[in-house]
Length: 211
Length: 247
Image (tube, rainbow over all chains, first blue to last red; front, side):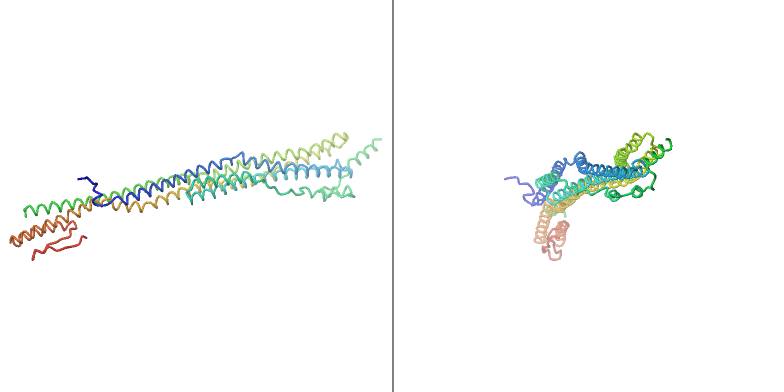
């Protein structure tokens, strides 16, 4: 006579197998999600500090030369206008150069500030892409799909061309101050300075007094 | 009372009772084990999620945030002050040119240039310090949002694990409820056997004309079986074996 387990005679065991199978399936699902997270981290590992710094540098490299160019053009126009009116060495000139220098500093800082915002925007974009992929992984528990989605998202983000808005005329205010037939006093007033006697006139008067 | 039939019936009834008790205990322990194992798993997930939450809390502490904000402001301010020095520095030669081109330039004009540049530096520097402070706050906020989103994402994973694990528990509890089935079935079988033996004893006693005493003894045997959920009972008056479905 064969010795059957008691359960063979009096039932039991079927539910237990189902429970063990369900637990194994859940553990396997969690394992796939953990594996998927690792793959997502790997796919997005290239988006690090050097990547974001490069974004800011690229932004600066695009805009700063344009700001410099516009500044140089404005400075030349200011020098020319001051010289034409014989007030190149005057309080008006000093005031004009000071204002232009201040504006230039602010414009440069503005570009640096926007470069930082651009860098943070890139961080936010990458975070959004990563979130989407993690949510897909959470919903599907499919690590292979998550890895593929992560690689695709990372590829798109890293190959997305940088788009920059065209730079406007930063020192347009100065152009409005310079007129062809402008008098020295008009120019001085336009530069926010009460008119002072030009140095050339002072020198001429001084030389006359000496002679 | 001490005839072999009664003793056998009582022994079977006792064994049945014990088997049923053992089955109930097995069910109880299996249920407790299932609940304990799940509680341990849930605590593990909760601990990991809590660790992330603590990490987030630490990251968002006022001191830590102020530190990051200050650090970002300082970094921006350094850039901005460099700009001030460079840009207004480019203006300085304009004053120098005045001095070089006209050695007889009154000192007041040369000083005027220098003072104007210094004033420009001072004003731009102050304004850009404010801008750097604002930029530092923006930078801190941007990083905090990203950090919080990352942590929330990871906590979402643990939440997923918690739900998934909890979903298996009803199946495991169902299995646990059958853990003592074998022993319980043995208990029911032994109790049934006790009742049958008791019934046989009763019938034999009645047949032998032992009268009420034997009937009563048999009834006791049957009753002993009945305590374990047996399915028979004896009418002491008639000695008839009556079927009673298990409870």
